[in-house]
Image (cartoon, rainbow, N blue to C red; front, side):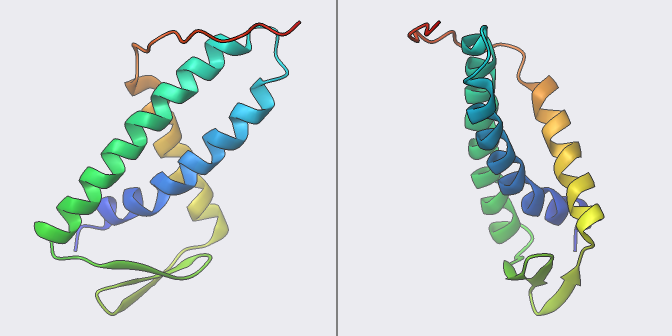
Length: 114
């Protein structure tokens, strides 16, 4: 069982959720469009990579990851528990990786509200 891949698989949807929540916070910024464009690119990349990782876990490693509880997961019958701090750290690491992985992003035409 590849624990690093499982950790990443669990953390990626959490990171996407946090980025989407952050988008709402950036909407009050004066230069919001730049931040929103970056976050859109990061979220799109993460979602694509997540589905690719899911396919790899199933087809190559034959792993089925299911959520039992907020910090508890079932991986092919084996229960894995995380502390909230571990979940936060895993999510933070994935977010950091993708913020710096996505260097180029498309500038979108957005309305500037002043």
